Amino acid sequence: AQSVTQLGSHVSVSEGALVLLRCNYSSSVPPYLFWYVQYPNQGLQLLLKYTSAATLVKGINGFEAEFKKSETSFHLTKPSAHMSDAAEYFCAVAGSGGYQKVTFGIGTKLQVIP
Amino acid sequence: EPEVTQTPSHQVTQMGQEVILRCVPISNHLYFYWYRQILGQKVEFLVSFYNNEISEKSEIFDDQFSVERPDGSNFTLKIRSTKLEDSAMYFCASSQRRDSGANVLTFGAGSRLTVL
Image 1 (cartoon, one colour):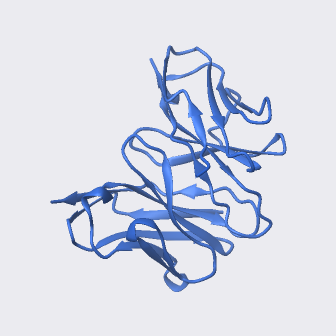
Image 2: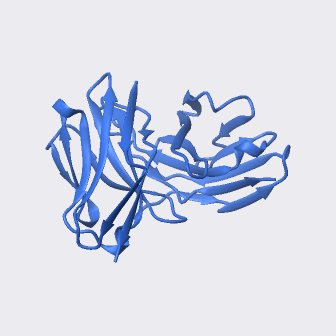
């Protein structure tokens, strides 16, 4: 079974500041990990994914995440926050090897302060 | 870019009524899913569907729920007798079959169901 824990249901950063959204995973098999973003009144959009290749994964809109097996973490970062980054971010996990359902974390709402 | 489309975007219904939510997955995808998100809560897995049958379902997906792929394009979620607690955003998703590799889901924009 797989699960993710997102630390901090709400995160506020100033425009231009570093964004750090935390995610820790639990998986009985090598995991695949994802970050999805949800803008107000919209669906879920894939930001980036880790699929056992490079441990540092770059995604859209300047976001990146690093897979750290020793820490069971997959934190999402962006060097400089933009107002348009305000959204809800979901960490998700699936088991590797063919079809596996994706399990989501509770989400972190990112507020960007001008 | 191919997308998953869902209809209706918002439906209001009376408790006890039947509701059908519709989804058109990406045409070359073979796995289909329904997730739901109650306001302010996490995105929860309901059911996955492959090769015209349910491949996995959660505890939430009880006898009140059913899914169907009536033709080559639509994928529907039916709630037989809605309850107040069924009020949520329902997301359809689809993915390609991969023997090895990440199961990347593409989500639709969601159907908001309000049960009064």
